Length: 426
Ligand SMILES: Cc1ncc(COP(=O)(O)O)c(C=O)c1O
Image (tube, rainbow, N blue to C red; front, side):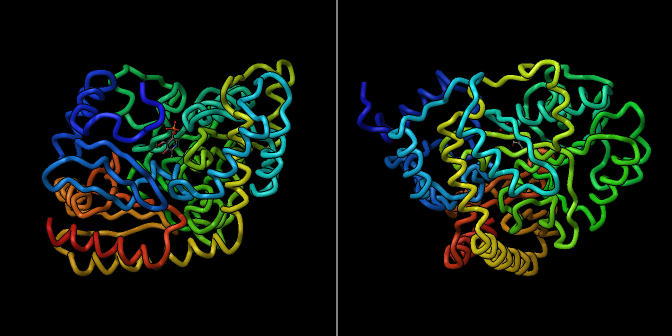
């Protein structure tokens, strides 16, 4: 067995076959069909390099605009993150016993409390976003002693139990996941919310900018109205900031100034994941107002995550939060984000026969095409021209772009050139 090499232990085609045989045949076939039957190899900064040795016109190097939804907010192998991970191991950290009290969890939770809006100051840890959303819903149900969960049509909150229930039918119907407790209403429709919120409602759960739903930007005032309706009905307001949190919009939190500078809405719970891992150690959080902690008064072990909140992960995340919350870093995101947005709008004007809308905030953008066919072909053409992006799973006519937040102005120019080529070659 080879352990001194991680990329290219076998040739490209043998590795694709191995993946098909032992991981997923349908996935391998899908990627082969679209011309991406290649194995990801070295990653650095904003780029993903594919394993060499393949023929044809398959790309060797891609600008990462997928970033797994923000996992690679700091790009690939940010030197400070790599150093911190290695140092944490050297200093003696591992996952840590999940029942025992933890220094690293306490330090990270305090750092988060200082950055989160309003009185949100308590944090529990999980491994992934779905698990953290599940906990948010559990908290709201136990606290209100009510069952109903209101979320948006086309939402995506994860594939675990409650998170799946709150997500779009395309993800849950194949598993016969059907419960009257989950009610889905159109996003950014205050009347629909007024009609469905009532004395049975435990929580209202929305992504601040629905990503899988099509990078939808709600009108100014919408989330303030959601807050008001939740207050009037004693309902817990949950913000899924898994993609919009941690600087993505140019502000630390999408819900608190990231959507509209003057709109600073404080939900009761904020869920973070993806970028919390800094790309190297899975970690997610459910942060909430202190009154919700009463749920655990009778039994502090009511909710458990054995590997959630790893001490090593917390140590790395503390470093990541330090970088991301720096005001000059946030200003950088706003600057390059506006450059990128302007470039995309220019492309909309140049290719108005194909693109019908461009929308976004900071470094989170959606490009809506005239139809799904054009959008899917654009994604393929982007890959052929050296950009890894994706279409929105619940709104396929829209392609989405979440480049690493560390992207430079020059790299934005390079990205726009590649996208122009992708559109010209469509
Ligand atoms: C907005 C949002 N919430 C929650 C999740 C679930 O996160 P995870 O895949 O880590 O469970 C995702 C994942 O894509 C997401 O985009």
